Length: 90
Image 1 (spheres, rainbow, N blue to C red):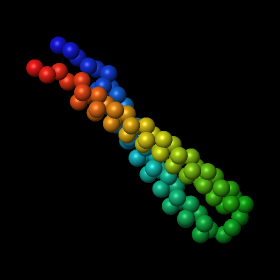
Image 2 (image 1 turned 45 degrees about the vertical axis):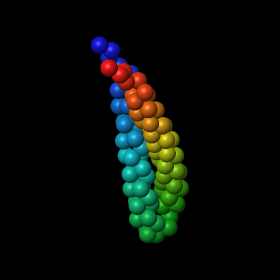
Image 3 (image 1 turned 120 degrees about the vertical axis):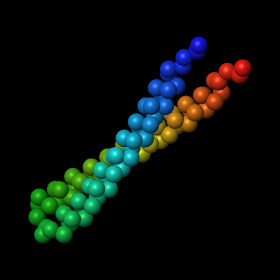
């Protein structure tokens, strides 16, 4: 019996990374919707500060989601390729 735990764990981590990327992308979209609602308010310094802060937050969330998505997809594809080539033939 040859138990291969590592590829299963790599696949699980890759799925978690893809899930985290989807959640972060959703948060970025919801923050963008909130930003649109904030821009309808009368312009004060606090509104301008909120717009700038949320703009930075949207950029950071999008960048992190992109990184996690690419890394998770790469790891998932590498795990699938490794699992296919690592099977023993009877």
